[in-house]
Image 1 (cartoon, rainbow, N blue to C red):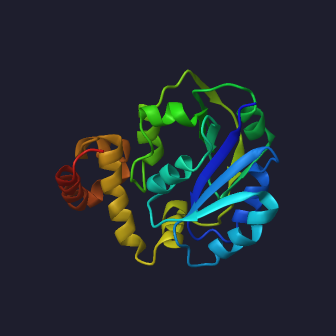
Image 2 (cartoon, rainbow, N blue to C red):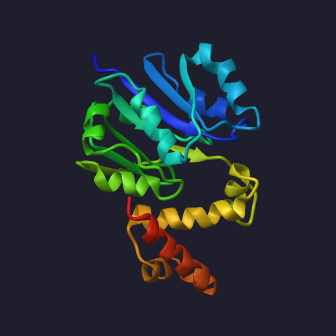
Amino acid sequence: MTSICVYGTVFNNVNTVEESIKSVWSPDYDIVIVDNYSKDGTYEKLMELKKEYNLKVYRLRSSRGKGRAYALEQCPENSITAYFDLDTYYNQNFHITIKSGLKELVIFGPVMTYINSKEDILKSGNWKDLNYGEDIEFLSRQKISITFPLIIGKNEDVITNNLFIEREKRYAKFWKIRMLKNVIDIYRGLAIKYSDLISIYPYVKKYGIILYFLYLLSKVKGQI
């Protein structure tokens, strides 16, 4: 029987990791988690949960993309894999799709995942070292036979006027600098130009000078 491995990376999610893990857990799954040296007790919580939920827990200073890449590499050979986020709670649809036997499958909706064998993913190339846009860049290289809309879970409830900013504040003390780095990742990961960014996000035009400067920096760093 083909094994199943769900994998993810985490940073400062101590309040959500337990329920998220419970929602993806199954006795016949491998669960691989890479912690980016969390500072809020997330790693310690994972170590508490490790035995009960048969977790494989690693620590690596990494972006979201690099953390997922390392986690995927730790999945068993020939396993069917799906990535998950540890601030998200998954429902039975998540498990039904993983156990369906389908491969090269993208589930899209409020929560996304990609289901395929570890070996087939690595043939197309692992996750890139990006903090933003890493999923789009990753999927653009993978073989996709089926794209299916399905609600497989829900994200953490956060009461805020700007979820994006609140999320970045959780990840980094100097969150404004992190957001600027994310813009560079958008340029590189999505392979877009300054004019494309303005077309996609017209409300950011007032930051045009900064965004154009970041575009030039992305050109210096080069495309992923």
